Image (cartoon, rainbow, N blue to C red; front, top):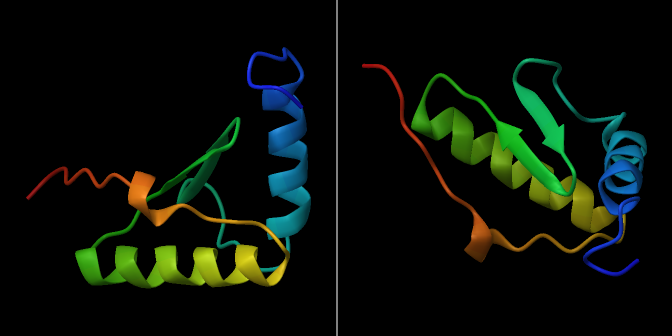
Amino acid sequence: MHQGSALRQLLSVIVMEALSREFRVALPWELFYADDLVVIAKTENDLIKMLNEWKDNMENRGMRVNMNKTNVMISGE
């Protein structure tokens, strides 16, 4: 599906939902938007662990994960 398609976001969420059903933790710790994923963790080490688990699980299901596009935001203390 091409980048500008109106169905791209919906189909991306449906596919990500189906592929991740077995290994995701739960809301609000993991949120999907189109082909993006938000992962929330209490510590940096927890975040790194969760991101690596996501990457491994998605790649085991045939998806490519671009870690170079990963951004981290620290909020709070």
